[in-house]
Image (cartoon, rainbow, N blue to C red; front, side, top):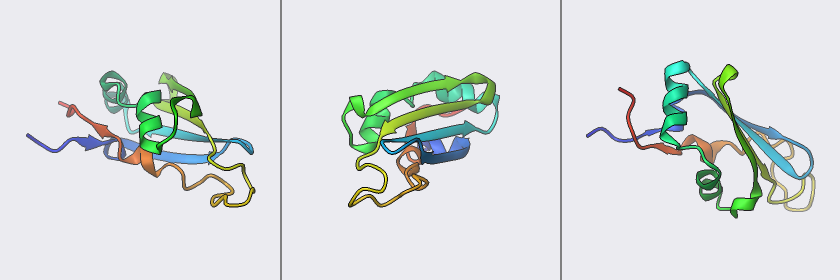
Length: 110
């Protein structure tokens, strides 16, 4: 049996960015329609799996929605520290996508 794939194996882009002083948003853009359908059908990217990946309470994942026309999944979460506040380490939110990259897709694509 082959090793499970990760989200980074199937996505063309996984990125994060600032969504205001209290939120971060992540975009997962899948390479093609087959990969998009596969990721959505496996149920890998959920509010629960995102909360686990980031080690935050479920209510810190403020939105998650699928955008079929863009073969995308969009996730927004509360920032652990307000933008620009003492201890904040990523003013633009551009390095916060890494935990999503390693989400495991348990079923292989056929």
